[in-house]
Amino acid sequence: QVQLVESGGGLVQAGGSLRLSCAASGSIFSINFMGWYRQAPGNQRELVARITSGGATNYADSVKGRFTISRDNAKNTVYLQMNSLKPEDTAVYYCNAVTSLYTAWGQGTQVTVSS
Image 1 (spheres, rainbow, N blue to C red):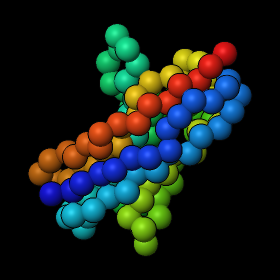
Image 2 (image 1 turned 45 degrees about the vertical axis):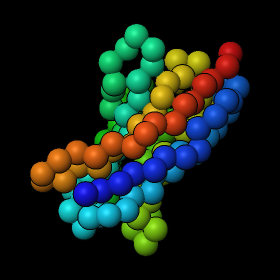
Image 3 (image 1 turned 30 degrees about the horizontal axis):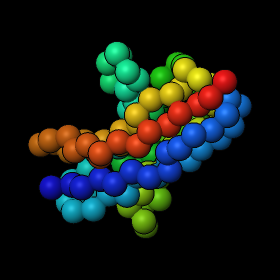
Image 4 (image 1 turned 180 degrees about the horizontal axis):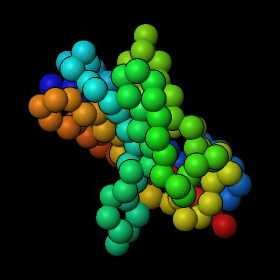
């Protein structure tokens, strides 16, 4: 099994930046790709960004040019650098890891952007 622990959320003013971290442990060799999702109150969980084991990335249109996903294989950690934050980015952000057998989720971290 893969375990994920997120950190780095918080309160920031519009236009500010935050960096989220997601540390993976357990059966990390089985991970095909990792990603960040978010869920705002009353909304469905949506993909924010994803990175494959080979380093290929894709982003939601709403965050392109503002957010960057990256990974440090030595630390088994994935990051989400969020710049130019907007109030509509406010949500609980979840890290996930996809293997051929299952998808693991972290506990989530709150990001709040004030206007």
